[in-house]
Image (cartoon, rainbow, N blue to C red):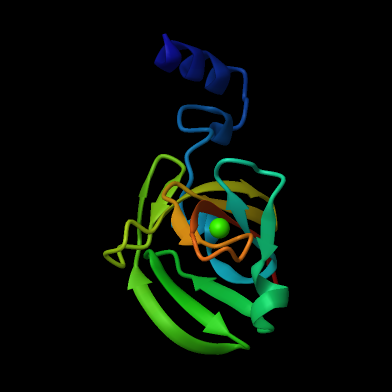
Length: 141
Ligand SMILES: [Ca+2]
């Protein structure tokens, strides 16, 4: 059925981009250099409890994404790490060996990454870590 609709769409001169994988995320679409505008740890048990990582650490975080899947981590503009990432649907896996998987929402030059796996973080400084998701908002240069 989808193929038929696409074929009809082409016949009607609807753009090819509207057919088939219209929501498919690619590294090509993500290619470029991105600056983190927000990086939060979010308490998995209470999403109103957050920690502002960028303010806390006091660095500028960036990434360079290449169309071949290379993702380079930039701290204050300096490359500090690089990985060959893979995409499955809208989930990017940085393949760093640590379950570093992020759900990606791409909207033109804005992109949000939300971690699928929690990390430990002690939000209330009581000596016991809570489970935290991570969310990074990026803006493409
Ligand atoms: Ca705690």
